[in-house]
Image 1 (cartoon, rainbow, N blue to C red):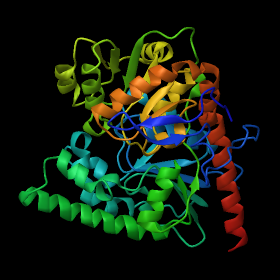
Image 2: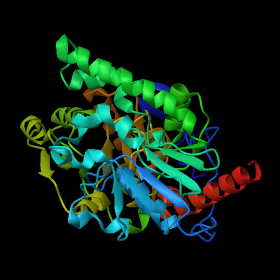
Image 3: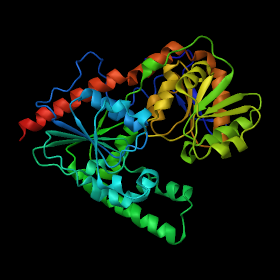
Image 4: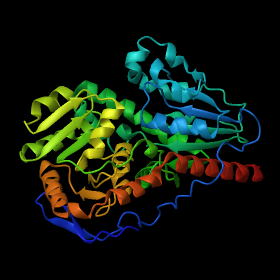
Amino acid sequence: MYAPSKPGIPIPDSDGRSIRSVEAGDGIATPGLPVLSPPDAQVGGRLNGSGAVALVHDWLPVYGGAERVLEQMISVFPESSIYSLFDFLPADQRGFLQGKTVQTSFLQRLPFARSKYRCYLPLTPIAIEQFDLSGYDVVISSNYVVAKGVITAPDQLHISYVHSPIRYAWDLQPTYLRQQSVERGVRSLIVRLVLHYMRLFDATSASRVDAFVANSRHVSRRIWKAYRRPSKVIYPPVDTDAFHPYGEKENYYVTVSRLVSYKRVDLIVEAFNRMPDKELIIIGDGPELARIREAAGPNTSVMGYQPFDVVRHYMQRARAFLFAAEEDFGIVAVEAQACGTPVIAYGRGGATETVVHGETGLHFSQQTPECVVAAVEAFENYRSIFRPDRIRAHAERFSIQRFRTEFDRYVNDQYHQFRRNL
């Protein structure tokens, strides 16, 4: 792997001290990381029979990270059919479906479903079980809520690509209750009962899956914790071809994020309020936008939503990219690295797999402004070792073609093994 000129870069702690010394390559060489196959295999689905594959997705309100994965599943199996509880995709975001009609559930027709679809969460287990998938050889569920709960026959292979077990119903329930201000009272009791019910369904429906695929080692561990089932890690596709390094870096730092509380953009803002000599640019929209703008100091520019070309422009020229959330994977951090831009990331979750400490960026140990300040200062001290060409090369390990090749090969291998065992 790529060895920086100065090995042993410390991970900044909240008091600026290192909690351990990380040698070059730590993170890439972690046991259990799958070997990524070269993108040389033909992709297109070798399963027998037209229409042999059904793709089941939880819901389709917007084109986001999970939908990028679904898009590439469609490319791998172009004759597949698509099922989803809801389909409210705007007209300008439907292109990735390649003209396919989405088969939806009865929830699609309920009052206010378009704007309040999350309120129907308790009905989703019932709704997902109503899909008739009897005409398919293979069912692939793209799951982060209940998609894996579809009912299949003994002679049908069910593979579930898990973006995450239901985060707010499992280990992140306390955080969810706190963020929604429902920690006490009658509303809290109702929400806790709903989440308990969702956990029961989530755990029970895991037995309906023949093979699990996780989008990161972090999620693979969560699958084992929740379902006691092993899983194959296939990282999500990142459109690395849409990004590329650009000349000299400028003096600003950047973060691009949906402005919601768990993304922790607030602590990045607070950290830069304590570093008035450093410039921060924030790109993104969301319910926290007004609060972030109010908290931002004169050295921080909050740009709100920006089109792709603007996002790429700032990513390419930034001194470093800030990433403070604990994500299951974190596509945007890989996009920044595809621009040759180092990433300063919270060292939990998917960032420990996508950002290589001391080679493509730095990790910090706690979600506090003090830790972010310490990480930025450490980055300034070691900035000269981060080479854009090497950072870019690392990002290419998560490319679209790599995903297509791995996913196509895995599904077909599982299918032929499954058929032999019937």
